[in-house]
Length: 387
Image (tube, rainbow, N blue to C red; front, side, top):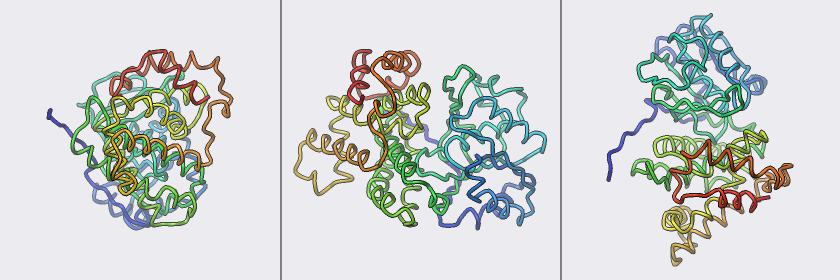
């Protein structure tokens, strides 16, 4: 076994109503006097920001709110959040919301360093940078952003850019399932499938697979798998919501240390060119990619199948168990209510060459971690399979 370097949060709180009950006290543990909450307008309207503010203010921490985050946050939005934090001399940064809010907060936490725009630091070694204390409070069970040291933003040319360094790992992750109760069914499904993909790709990573990530990926997948139908059918099931949220966080820890692969490589162009939300895009392509990977990855998919479906797979060969695993993922997608054909999203065959070009020329690093190499022709075929 090769050497391992593994990173995760210093402090994880997983409990119902923990944002209300713990946020202020945790802020004082970091000697905070002025906090910025980085979020989006939708989260503000749900009242979650008010709860966070009250907890902080009761602990004597002043609060400013930036609620201008949008999906796939552009550089300009991130710069605006940094400007607000700087002007208020904030000494604590809190990302509250989905992956976009938490990813924005990760970069805001770097504001004490001398840079004018986030574009100035995209290609720098940030290991020597200072970082403010950073809390992450997810409102979806999907991205795992609260447990990762990557921030994905959108450059001025529309391409996705990643800042990838342990420097931006949140210090504290607060997993409060009450914050996921108001998620619409389709977002619940898309984010859950996203988290499952994180587990599966971490477990099958060709380049950075390791025993710690493997253990977290298996446990995370079990929690997500066994609660998926419960949260779709009973959105107010707080126990199931809590299991999904913790499973998603375990998935985040796993994939950031082991890497994701070709599912993400094929999904990113769908988000870039057609603005399909990330979790939905992953769900669209996952079964096509996993089926393609079977010649190399069947034994690993079979191990995951036996972890989540032990009774059904006990007498099966690896290929049979792996095939059942993919079939069940396809059933999850079909029951999700999400559109699962590209044609349903106004994507046609003439759009495919541009998508393939992005996969091959921009996201080759994600093909490199995939269990099986891919050619232009093979990527084209996978997109055509889901037209």
